[in-house]
Image 1 (cartoon, rainbow, N blue to C red):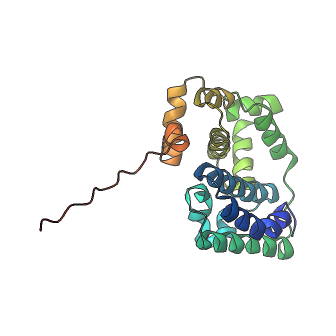
Image 2 (image 1 turned 180 degrees about the vertical axis):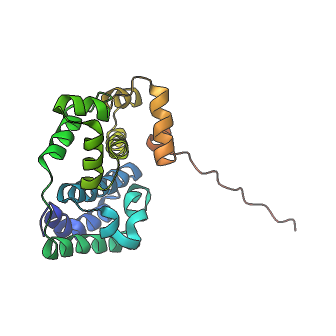
Length: 212
């Protein structure tokens, strides 16, 4: 197995035993699962594959992996997805990404703190924006704007779980207005940045006493 999956697969059982022995905190569990989810996404994009095709029926759980408990069911889910990646590497040759799209992705990574539009990038690369839009969608299977949003939100979630302050994450990802960043994050993840970092405590229903 290639694409950084081999060490993940080999160490999965060890990590599972470690979390039981050392009683990981909820934050540590979320960070670990977020790391795995991000790894799956990065490998699929790097190979030019669609994560949804590889994950199949498990896709929704994979993209929301950090919200799952570190249970035996989650462990089985991870092993299934890793095996599908292994099969994909074994039987499906990875298509080579067009140099133009590689340049676009490199520019986006170098300018994560800026609001780069497709038009901006087309001008920098001296190509027609309509042609670039079609080429990008054909190559990655999604519009430019969707790709940028996904990358920013995945990075935002990772930084927040690493302890970076919300306002710093907002600026790092090119959102000059933190309130706008909060709205975008909530729309994408279904929770605010603050709720991710400090999940609301569930109210316990008080037990009612029975009258003798």
